[in-house]
Length: 470
Image 1 (tube, rainbow, N blue to C red):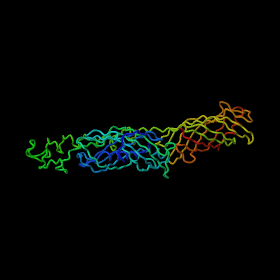
Image 2 (image 1 turned 90 degrees about the vertical axis):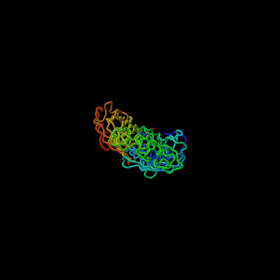
Image 3 (image 1 turned 60 degrees about the vertical axis):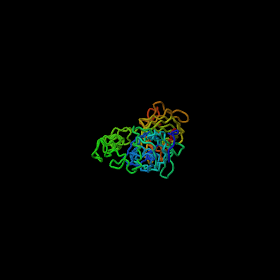
Image 4 (image 1 turned 45 degrees about the vertical axis):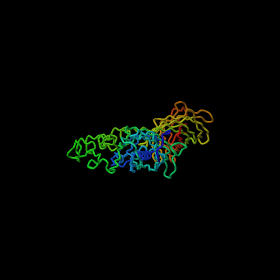
């Protein structure tokens, strides 16, 4: 782990929320340290990360640490601990669960700027290995924690400084199933990348001052009560306080730690880590935050999935089979596990046997009524419900037309209910099967009732395979 100069940025989960945590912890640990009295620091950032399958999804990161507000110039600083908490939506857990993912790991990179008294150090890339984390099942909002430690640093000039986290990116992420096998969120690859965009405004984790290191009193260089300190600003010869050299309430004392007007007071209400910051994730009065993953007003657009379709249907009464082809365009709601879809079945034809020995052929078309809908859960169980008219433009025996026509179709729509045959993977597809009843025909000519008797009825079967497009 270390700092690197800027390079071309690649484009998660992401769906990978544990990576974001590790990035921020590492960012802080590489860019801040100190030996003076520590002060609470907190930064809340919101990101939108583009993950395979689910698209853009918000995450919220809260970084907390006790970081020195004053750092002596030229003095090496010891390490200290950084904690980061990321709030993840159930939508992300649902999306990963649908493809069978149970754990997530990988790498993450943060874009950091350290503003020093000597000038900003920008374009710093901090990389971190993301430890394997569990994905909750059943899906639920969850928080992920990470911890980092700072190395020793030394500053060569006094003045103001700050630590800014500008952005993060997630890359080389690996989702694994219950057996530890990588889940291919990108076709043909065991890993995936995700670009994250900062959607909140605050970037500053901490502000600090680099101060002179007093060699005559290294353990308390600014002690206002030290009467022997030749540089003590509260020396009894101070004309502004001739009688009380230790007066802690002297309003004119520029180094007085209780001075209410002291502009460098680390506890000043202008401190960017003020707990009343409206981006604080624990603030119960922030109901309109558009990127808050648990905000009830946060829009969760459905995922669009597109599949090609192949299969066949057997008509029991006619003792024959017709090939099926077409496609389905589905809008899947991750939160509810439901979808609505437009089903297209291409015109086809079939060969049948009437009375058990008369060879017959039929041209077949399908007219969908409403939209196909159903459910898909994290176990890979898919259900579909479709309603459609079955149309027979032509029915012939030995090539001689016996009926059909533009208006020849089932008298009522046929209800076709299918379930997945094995696990259905939304990233690749799967197999479906089911049975249905074909209603009696109407408007098929003079032999309508005869033809209907040899085609309609229960016990018809259908099987198909859906393969994801693109």
